[in-house]
Length: 171
Image: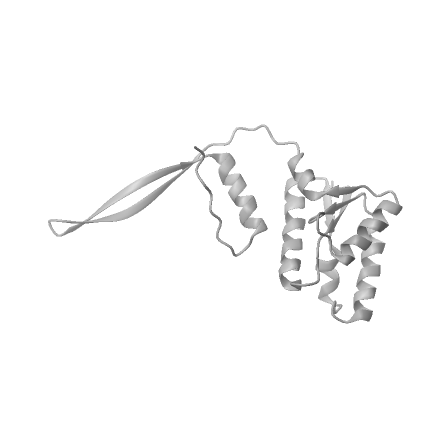
């Protein structure tokens, strides 16, 4: 059962559409990685019916967010080193009301890892070499990627939706 309410604190203003997509990703990731967590991100929800660029509607949205924060068990801050004004307000509220404020990067870093062994992924990359007696010659290269690297890649792809990710081979 999801019995730990976690408030997802991340920027909304600025590049609002991009920030909302990031917050959606944070919620999804929290729900996937912690089976007891119910992520709460008011700026994902409230922006569906309130206009954050209208000062009155933004104030209503911020008030709704604080109401939700008041029932949460923890506040996870994404971008704790450079919080927006709205985030600063949420952090201050949490601190004043005894709600633990956690740096999301530390939460992920300290997450208990499953100790199951992962297999490797083998990827066959074909490449056209040329023609041999009128027949196309194709050579392939097989690349082995560790299961841990595949998991890390999946996490990066979720965090940076729509972007290409480069992974360097371990030396």
